[in-house]
Image (cartoon, rainbow, N blue to C red; front, top):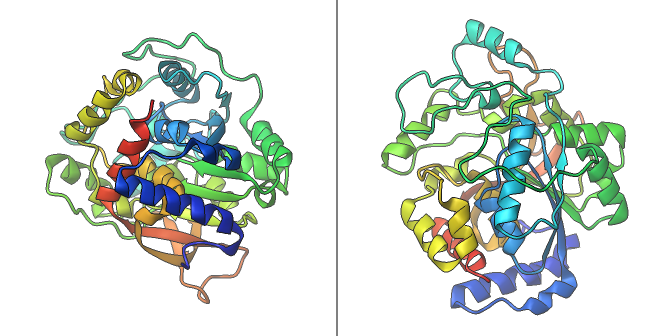
Length: 375
């Protein structure tokens, strides 16, 4: 029970009920809507199964999706996110533009870093080509103001006119102590919100984020698993989400959140988005079928784990309590994850985090399949 905080007792029952209902194949009661859990998704890519799962989960109110550059440039991501919401018939959820550039890091700084310390495996929006042959999708390098047309077409709806940081601040003030921030990309928007309003983190209910890396090991024997393992085999503390904007991540790690749940890259090595799973969920829901029609299987289920841990914490099989920060010194370890057991931290306002180390992959897929199969 150490995984839960006492202030979340009301939601333990909801999570337990969801876990039991999913395990027994029972439909989840729509009556939970009276106790809707509020969440804002902060992401740096197109709409994924993580967002789809949260959007379709019972008893969950997605207040909005804030977007910052990371895996792609912001405007490219916004177009893809809006199009995904159109496919899912959820255009009621606002997509809010955030930061185009990291606080300090840049493409030129990254190229300079590589000239000193070696090539990075993945650079997101700055990625021009893979260093070695791979089955992973080819990077689509372009300028920040270019918006390529995705395979399923451009969005016809428009993003919010509000700035992401202002939206985040406004929502936590409107619903103090009720809003979960679920971050699945670079943390630039969250850092800006915290710097604009020092009450931001303390007014939120909690932060759940996918990011950071401790000591992941390849667990699956597939070709895709081996290719994705390149990112951590020689640099186990380096993870893209937090390295893209290390200064922003460090600001967020020092903010006074009531609760932080970290989902590093480690548990994702036991998962893989398989063609069979995509086929199963597509066969149960026509909208999901359209959403995943152009997806390439093989990637670890990073963001999906973070979303599902929040929805159903019963999938967690091992966690730890650690203090976490990000290395912001421009050296070989720039952007690497720093962590300490309690008592060993520098005590410079680092926050204690619940770090998810392993999950039950079967429970992860079962939870998602049950939710995504709902009408």
